[in-house]
Figure (tube, helix red, strand yellow):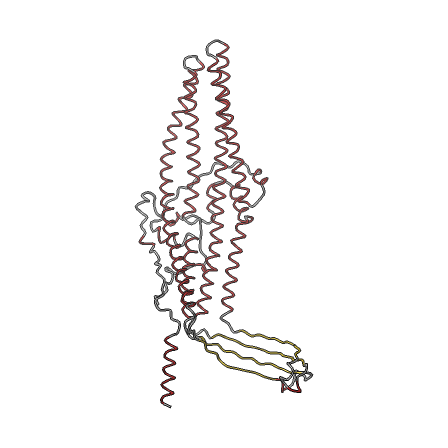
Length: 485
């Protein structure tokens, strides 16, 4: 008897020693601390105030009602948003499926089947008979180690990330519509400049023709005038193409056909906002950018995936029960002698699985490290994006002021050169050179103002685009980090 007990204890020890183990497996990713990422040295101007964060309808501050209507139209009809919403619904369904797996399951079934056993198996009773079967079953996994709950929390985190990403898609779309609209306004400005240049070239060519007829200029100056007119016509065609392209881009963003863009009137001059940057930028930015909130949810979900994977190494207990009725041949189903039932718990423990569970846990660790790396990359990129856009905005302010002085000087020079040429004092080449300088100055000013509007929109997007997380989308100040095994 003692020998049998010793053998049983030895066998149990060997079995337990061979059980699948998660030892030595752990994620390596570490979340960056936002407060450790310094951003103030690159942002040297501005008065930090909470009011600098963009509002949800920030585009209304640009002062064009048509832009407001276009953004609302895009938010209602862009196919890309429908795709983002579909992904969010799919993630919500997955979370619901994981939640259902935690709850008791009750099933009802019935069947009727006919069978004839092989001859000789049941002796003289081997004849065709009909079996009628009905049952009611109950199953419930006790989730002793919280694995099913962790799986549900992981799916819930992924669902919340998908919902936030759907919000981020709307923010990105509103910014893209505003930028395309600003580009349309710039294209119209370029068209005006090209038309003005064509008018100037035409007038200069007409004056040159008069001077040629009077014997004051030669055919050389007239041919140069023809070339300037042709060049101005080409630039006018380029500007018209830019208008058509901007309208087409807006049609795509609105989710409409090409004709929709043709109905968009010329934009009003947009007033770019002068935005300051909050003093506690790294920490505050976490709650104002949808991509960062979504990335944090991905990290949180991955940590729960690791917790769920670890519980698969532990014993699992399920409760099961079944009751039913079974009758053979012509016997009635609904009678006491047809009743059967069974009740009992079941225990399972993984022992040898060929490394399947360890490989699964290693994959979850890798997914966590990937989510952390993507979060860190998003955070670093967001901070540098804000700093770069803000610095560019400050630089453009100085550039516009300097270019305005250059434009004023070029305008005065052209006026004087034109007067001298008409009076026969100045040469045609002198007037042509001055006119080209004025055109270049006007083009540079139009481009700088367009960049100001575009950078203002980019900075608004970099600061979150007016994103305000709902209560259910808030995450902890730090996503949970799985403990090392």
